Each structure stands twice: as C-alpha cells, then as structure tokens.
Image (cartoon, rainbow, N blue to C red; front, side, top):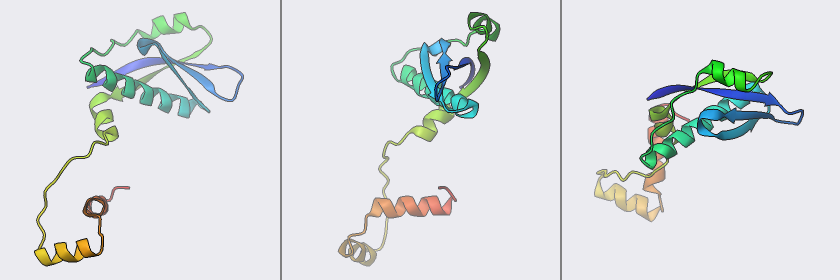
Length: 131
C-alpha cells in the first residue's frame, strides 16, 4: 500500500536540517535536502510497518496546505512510501530452505567447514545480479 505524506524541512543553522513528520508525530534529520527526504521516507516506512505489526492503522495523510499553514517559512514537501515494498526490502528474517545435493558433495563441504547458508546466499545474489 502506497501513501504520500507531507514532511517539513527546517534549517536550524546547525549541521543538519530538521525534518518533521507531522502525521506520525516524528522527527529526523539530514545533511541536505536529498538526505532529509530519504531519512523521512525511511522513518515513515519503519513507523508504518511498526504500526501494522501492532495491528494499528496507518494515519491518513494531512493536507499539504494545512501543514504549510502550520509551518510558515519552512520547506514543506511530500514523501511517498510503499509500505509493502519497504517491508520486503528491510525484512532480514531468516527463512529455512531445504536443498538436495549429492552425498559425496555434502561430505566434502562439511569436511572443508563450508557454511551452506552463506554459499547459497552468495550464489543466489550472484545469479540474480544483486549486491
């Protein structure tokens, strides 16, 4: 599910820009505008997935005009987050998979102290051209 939320970016005169996320009552920061927007998207994705994990509803996005009126002089922009994609990209749970190999290969790999899970992960990433 994809939603678009307004964020507020304020220059505090310090090293970082302050980023307010009104619909989640949250804050983060970024070194520049690009990082500020990325950090807000990450914050929203994490907070939204946490709400869903606790069987709570995602907040409805505020109207950007209302947010602009509440924060005159600040940069107000929109950030969209696909919560399904965010969860998939950040889910690091281990999943058990069974695989079948010849007995002689199993014996040789165990003798060489090969980590089967690591080799399978590396091979899958290489095969799919993933980092």
